Image (cartoon, rainbow, N blue to C red; front, top):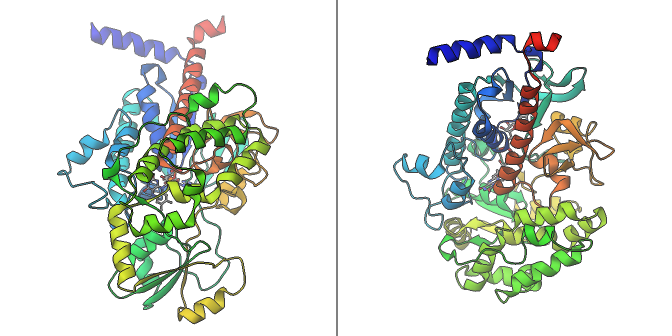
Length: 498
Ligand SMILES: Cc1cc2nc3c(=O)[nH]c(=O)nc-3n(C[C@H](O)[C@H](O)[C@H](O)COP(=O)(O)OP(=O)(O)OC[C@H]3O[C@@H](n4cnc5c(N)ncnc54)[C@H](O)[C@@H]3O)c2cc1C
């Protein structure tokens, strides 16, 4: 009976107009690409048979992307196992996978977890997603190459790679990750990959790092060999705040929620968003001035456990990325600028933290005179050479963070700017509900979806894992809707002829 059903189905399939099968391309299979494919696998069913799916990325990056590459243990994830589990697709639980490894502790207060562990999980997740899609008859092909351009052509959107050009897809998801502005000096050494950093530095036992954020922390921990002296140079002269997992006493946000913004009556303004933020802070006896205060930051760095209200407040605010992105999407352009200006880099300094175990390591390095943080140094002003000479260092590691300006990106990213809408700063724009890239005139394109940093113009915050995971879900839904629409257009050849 079952056999009969199968042969009937294959006879029907043979009659399908194969030209109507969907053709999908995913360029970049790091976090965003993997989570898009995982969600797509969850949505797939047998009606998708015949869909062609091309995945383009370098083999060593599949699943792990740039952040969670097979680098060294010094690169610590700053996201708790609890959060990573919450972001897991249903087809592969992080907690179960990790327990299967032998239950190594992931309490970030005690032992930092190497980012490559999460990368291993993502690689396995990608394999599971591909298996699931293939089991539904989706023709998945991996193309081990780097894409140089995505071009609209007759019949779809073409992916031009360094070793091949793919047949035009009718919809492409582009998730190429983050990039940094090109260094402007000749004496710089790149921070990543961390595993080769020591040899790129030659025999230098004193180095300067331009920046004092998370990349600078990565560099410091990598060079923590008991000998090397590391100078972090930045305008603020402060290290990121400290994340204490044991202090998970924060409640869910009450005021700074996506619902509050969606149901806001009248035109939403930056001031209205800030006032809801102020109400959220007030629950913990905090004000914006406390969040932004350099003195409070310094106190916190000296003893991160001393202020439980601040830690509770932080844990509540860490759940507000989606709400702020919702508000951002609802704000008119001028109000978006006002919100960014009002919160600025200090908001991210408060929100993006190093685990407590990392803080202990950095404090030890400071106490032993191997880590020095210098403030008041602006990379764009002259005088940096004098600073380097005074410090007696001849190697500079840029750690100024990532760019979100498309024209500063690698070929694929810079080329995108010619086909999509950008904001005044040159950041890519999408329709956040569907992930569709906007055209230069502002309408959503049907053939191109953007995930991650390439869409930074449409979000208040974009590179955090939870934001990328949300984008991936919405992009997958858009692709699934497209495949289902194409599937619905299929009909037996005889019926079509009539
Ligand atoms: C060093 C670092 C550490 C981070 N640590 C954390 C953390 O601990 N916790 C946290 O929440 N967030 C962290 N983040 C932020 C965020 O989670 C990552 O940026 C996240 O990986 C973004 O996902 P993505 O898919 O956009 O990029 P990625 O995961 O980097 O994926 C991009 C993929 O695209 C591929 N690609 C790029 N260009 C091309 C091309 N031309 N052709 C084909 N493929 C291409 C790359 O090879 C890569 O596989 C970190 C970011 C960085 C850079």
